Length: 632
Image 1 (cartoon, rainbow, N blue to C red):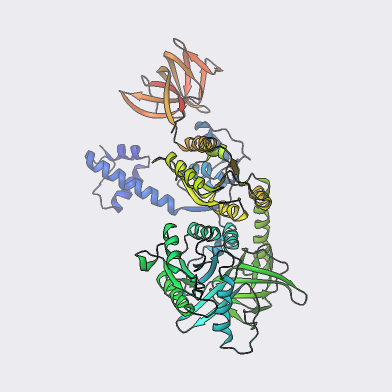
Image 2 (image 1 turned 45 degrees about the vertical axis):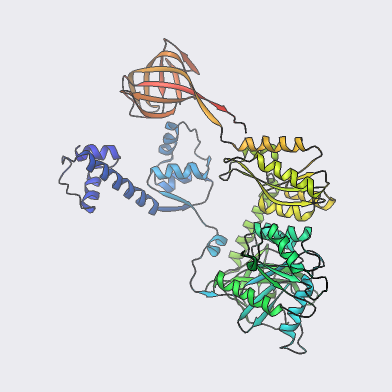
């Protein structure tokens, strides 16, 4: 093969090819130089890789959607050229029509331009590369069943580790506090349990590093304990178990460990990976050990944050003060927050006037994993809202306006969670249906769970995120929100607040009285996830007799229909010398000067497939596609 032939095959100018080959140290003298097949293959691969790299580096930033006219300007071509290009591909656009991101990117790639979406101010702030990473304290949340001692344990830690060092010191409730120990610092989030934890996650705020699961040694695992475990597991957060009330005569830590093992939390001293520690919030026994184990776990996790970038934080509590106005407790995640910084917080902004910690001390700056109460905002943000330090008020208002627009879009768009009957429209890589399962009694729950597991196959599976006995509650809805699950109840009801919350969040609750109906519905939904079989149905064959190159319509093949019929819009493949050389669609079909939908056997017609290299004697086979649904 000669170099000029290879250039034509690859689709670049001969001079450009020679230049590239010389840069790659290929011994090429002129366009007439001859190379063997193997060398041609190597060169083709190298040049295509080089072309791809060059295109990827030729970045042009735009806002999507983009009009045809705007895209033409970015590509430095005339809009008419772009419209003509689309027409050849069978796409009909007007000059002011919006193009979606994929269409615009694909066409730009053909012009050797890598079109990328322009980052918003908020995205630029969030995606800044780290400058100086330093170790930060762990953020810990306590979870567990009501009355198992979460609050008592937090109170004991607060009093023994903070008050003892600062006798007479004032403390204020800001939703979080820090404990400074000889071996490190721990930030505790004083939240009301796993529902608040999951509500924060549902709003995109992943603030917790470690969960301490509090289980009473005399009562063991309860329904809320199981809920807390599932909420923590879904968030992929390490769990340390504090077996509390160890001082009670009826305390039975081995019973608790046995129950935890059944739920997948096998204690370390039983050969598992779960850290457990016996504690008493009343006497303080084991509390020091618990704190040491938290710091040990944090050490393994290597928690770090960048202290050289503008601060980022998450709101964990808010209140309105008569004297100071709106107050927000913010957990700092990255950077250093300083008094005087201008920040955006949710849909509000302002310059930070003051910062206080949980000991009511005024601070000038706050570091990653610090929780501080700030004043200076012009309104009350919501818990889980992001705080961003910005350069000026103009940037702040741009971010707020964009957030408001996105909020409006969310309100008018359909709920983001899918319904069971729409599951076949849900395209997913995982091929998984997530379910929160509730039943009236434990025996029934187990039976339904086993039956659901049997429906799963290698291709599609039922993923039971959480299972429990009793009424469907708000905790189930919150968990469904973060896991994109549906809630299935068997012989149970949903309480009023969970119904309201599910409606608000667009989450489906299905309740059944007959097990076969439940299984049939889930089975039908899973069948929707099976990739359908696509069968090709032959329609007709045409032979190319003459080829016309037209300035407006492009390349048109004058054909005779040898078999069946040719139908406009159907898929086709072109065969030359027994090999398929092109696959596409019948973009236009003509009988003499008229556009027609189909042409039958024995008749002549003009066919345009949007491909310029079609030749006389080529064979065009036309076929439809029949989608065959699959059954489990």
